[in-house]
Every structure is written in C-alpha cells, then in structure tokens.
Image (cartoon, rainbow, N blue to C red; front, side, top):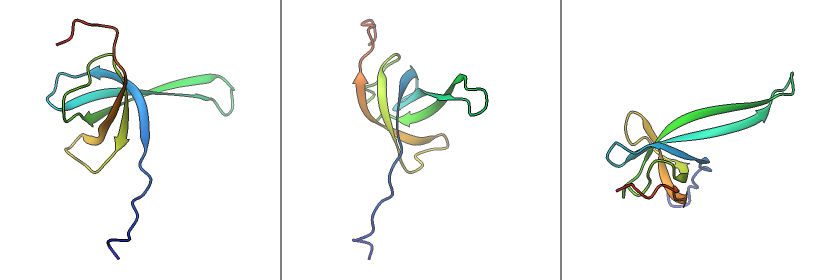
Length: 93
C-alpha cells in the first residue's frame, strides 16, 4: 500500500528574496493582494518564509518560486524550487 500511496498537493509560492546571509537558507517575502470583502479596497499582505536553498543560488532581489516540504529545521518548512528572475544588481558574489 505504501508504494501506491499518493502525495498531497504541495503549496507553491512566488516571492522576492529579502535575505541570503544564512548558509543554505533564504528569506522570501511573498506578497498577497486581495479585495477586502466588506470595504472593497485592495489589501496587500506580505509574509516572510524561510526556505532551504541547497546550492546557495538565490540572492537578494531575485524573484524565486518556493514549494512546501517537510520540516527541515525550526523555521524552514519550504525549499527553493527555482530562481524565476535574477536581480538587476550585478555586484553580488
């Protein structure tokens, strides 16, 4: 039965890297925009996620896609899926 068990659908989010100072970890800010149900105003909410970046390939300003995964550490429950666009800053090492 374990061989035929199907994984659940994993959440995927797109956001911007705000910090890459940790080893194999990036902080990704995901912005969510929606209309307020009563007032009709567009509301912007930003949430930060710690994501596992195995190859240290994402840098500050990059637009990335992250996917939900098993808990890797106390804060990391997401991992880097791909770098969508690189940042315009070329001075990063």
